[in-house]
Image 1 (tube, rainbow, N blue to C red):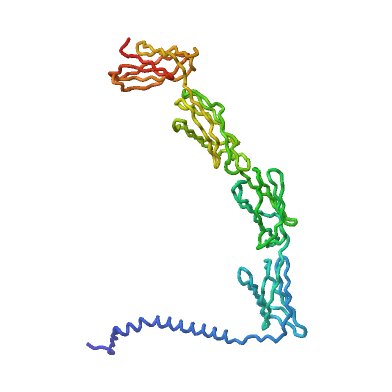
Image 2: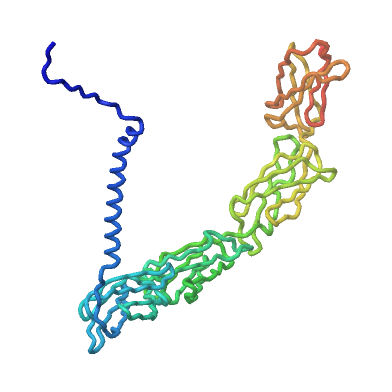
Length: 433
């Protein structure tokens, strides 16, 4: 076969492994080169800024500094010295040494003069350092606090105190002027006691406060406290003056003899509960009553709150007839003992009891004087076995000297009933009709 020009076939060779790695790194190299260029530009800008020629200020004499404090701050004014004008653009730097730390202000001067305003109004000694170009200044000034302003706010250390045994309350006041500096004006304190007596004292302001203990006197009630400083005044403060603990007490018996019936009470009156200054104790003070019998202690103890220094108490007479002694205690006070008598409840010569079916008929009962016992007088009833064991106890009550007691179901073997009233006992065999 005849062919034309010889055809050329181009065979594309695959790059070797090493060449592939070189091609893969080219984008990263380009990115690194771009970063180096940017870094070089930044370094050049920084070098140029540091080595740029600075403006040279003409030489000038030290300006005159005038410091002027006023009600709202302090002004630093710099004036050019004679024959040496103050150029514009001179840097100004002022530092105040304050209790809260350095206070810095910076500015630039104008042509011929410069001023810096700092709103600093704290009273007391203030030290400053100023710098104007190559010239430095050091000095101080003292601000005097202004007059105290209304309202004054007195603080009393206690809302209530006892006139006995408690320390007196203290009053503390920080009189402040319009800039909230503590004024150095003397403070006048006036108090009025519950009995109308007054006390006045003038207090100096030291260490940023005025203080004093307040006299409480000897009377209970309300202590009124008023403060003033120049033309400034404050609201009235009050302290409750309370009595001290009880130091004296007395007990008496309105009724010192009562029958041992369980219903008739002794009537006791605890009075004159007062502190050592003679003030009645606070209402609600606890009063303890304790009694001891002549033949042994009586199971009697009571605690009651007082009202107006008095306690009225009714307590059932002791169940065992006899003589008893009672005393009252409250706080540091202990009264003398009062004698009480518990008598036999009833003097009954005869206690009739009979049975009608399932009912015990008690009475009629008369006292030794021939009177009917009070309605509601309790009568004890109990049932016993033949060997004396008690199988049931109960109580019934008299009405018009009589009582009808319906017997409950009793255990088998119950043989007799006993009825007791006062010191009288009646026995009834239950097998009797």
